[in-house]
Length: 516
Image 1 (cartoon, rainbow, N blue to C red):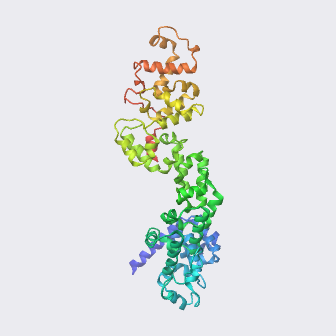
Image 2: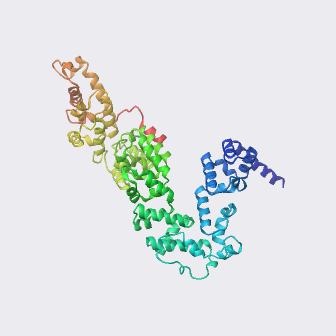
């Protein structure tokens, strides 16, 4: 007995400590429910899970209660309602309303599953919860439109012996059979995959299907293969269609037909992600290449883009049309970067990092270290040089160097950024092969050419007047001086100690990747 009391006291102390650390929730309850601190303390003590709620959760629940027509005191008298999500509360209320209950009380909402699955229609009539004399089958069927025939012969036997749950399922099954040609096996398989489908209000199912078929022009086969679409809230879907209007420069209806999952996303979430992408300068073209990024949370998208901008392996692709693939498959990309670097493979391309596993495994097992097709390399250089230089011409000039495909993109981008501080894009383009060389070699050579005595003594027999050399000629001289040491074989692109072009970047990408 004493031990039991001690345990009870320990639990009470634990709850009190938990509550003491959540003063914010305490004041939130007082503010939104209009109750005293002592009353809020009591509710949180009785229902400790409320301490985990944020103000938005409490505010959303209070708003839902108001929208359903209940006074705020309901949450004080029935704090168990906080257990339910606002959307669950709404669905239960609407279903009970559709079934003709005389009054939808908070107690009915809490005992919803027992009432729907355990009590027959006859028992509910006898208890006075639903009217004695009305056709339950026709009442439920009236929630649906597009019925081609009457439903009076759908249910065989006495309806009073069925539960409301089983009766609703029969109505839903028949409706989906008529509207989208759903077979019994497909319906049962859909219920198993999406069990909450059975707890959707009939009017919501009807309105959603009407919108999908008439507004979005979604074909039947696509709705059948994506039955989660029936979960979509019709009001939210209308907001997406008429407020969002487009994603990635493409009509939102076309986007939903291509990616049905977006129809089930919250409108405000889609709009927030759209604003985040705009804030980070990611345009419509990149969005249209990866609409799946809108299935993530706004916070995740924002955090991943911020990390990408501060990580060299990601930042080089920030303006690439397929950059959002790296945001979508962020964890996979990070894992692949680390694995390849551990194998001394540094020539990474976007296709390898964010592509299918077959392409990645093929690259991982291939001997040596080289880019796939060099598209990413050409794109990165063209982004730095500007639109005045075609990618075709850049590629043709780069290909003249025997090892152009073997230089890591991150190092080429680093050299390119360094050179643009002192040389014009035209100067770099005229000597584009200089981008393939290590920055340390380029920097030392640039310093050397300004030492006239060293320059003439080691490289030329005559005097060289640097004042007569323009910037482009200086870069040509840099390449000449580096390659002269290697008999113009192209081996100047490699460092002496590692046989590869490894740049000492100001920030270490590997450490940043581990932090992510």
